[in-house]
Length: 48
Image (cartoon, rainbow, N blue to C red):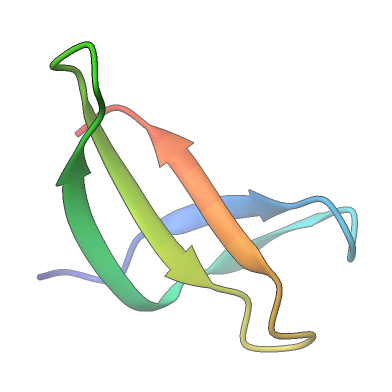
């Protein structure tokens, strides 16, 4: 999977997700979940 960019709430900045994984939410919408490379916080982005 290509590197995805998401907003880290802890760092208050857009970061490239580490270990990004495409998931499907309960309502069927696609999302991407990964880890912030700086602080290790979970990053979640709705959409493909």
